[in-house]
Structure formats: structure tokens, C-alpha cells
Length: 165
Image 1 (cartoon, rainbow, N blue to C red):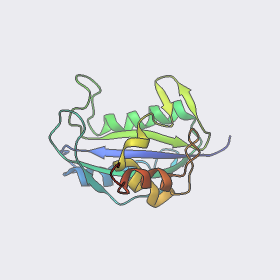
Image 2: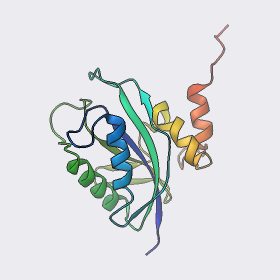
Image 3: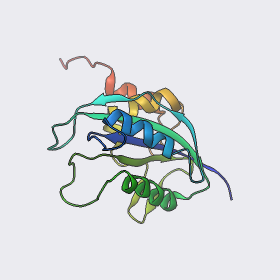
Image 4: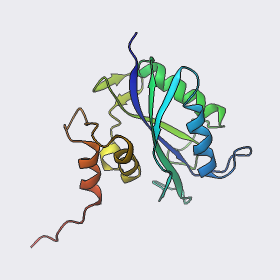
């Protein structure tokens, strides 16, 4: 069975009783991504970002490059298992504060859809808190839908554009 590469987005905006601040939660989550038949190949620096939705707490965000033999559904199951170990409960209103959020952004198998998972992540192209750190560790990785590299996609979000005439 071949090994796959995954780009995983990490986010936290709630303290954890054992790990501490959201930044410390992400450090512990990165360690968890390097166990259980997964190898952490690279991790971006942790950045802060404004919340999406009704939450008022700022997020700590990072991106990790992980190798594993898991297919996308198995990888999603593993990521949700890690979230649960950190106290995440997937219930109630979406966009609430959370101790840990792990999302499959890309995998080396191209586009994939099924069983509650769509890869590439449907909204990653509009999220600087994913693309900016992703461009630092996997800048040449191409989006299988647009064909653009992560560096190119990040630049589209962060470069100033001239005002229309």
C-alpha cells in the first residue's frame, strides 16, 4: 500500500485544561500528527487570525504536511479521533469556539469526494490563515482543481490590488 501526503490545517481558539493556550494546543496536536501510523514531515509556524462566524476569540492556526498509508476517509477518521481526544464535540452551532479543528486541505491523490469529505477543502482558496502557512511548507504543491500552486493562491489573497478606474 502506497504512502500518501496530506496537507492538514490546524486551528484552535480555546484553552485546553492540560495543554493550555490555543498556541500550546496546536503544538500538542502537531505531536499527535506524528504518531499512530502518521509521520509529520513539516509544520508551518503558528499564526494568529481573526475568527470566522460568531466566535469572538482569535485563532491560532498552522498547517502540517503528513505522510501516512491512510486513504482520505481513514485520515478524516483519524483527525476526528484526535479532535475528540482534545475534547472537541461536533454538535451545536457551526463556527463556535473550539479547542481543536483539524481539516484535510489537500492530498497527493488529487480531487476526492465522499463520506462527508471533499478534497481539496472547498473553501481553502479564500482563507489566508490556511494558504499563508501552507505556502511556507508546501508552496509548490498545486491545487488539483485550479492547477495553481499554493504560493500563487496565497499571493492572490495577500497582494494589494489597484483600485478599479
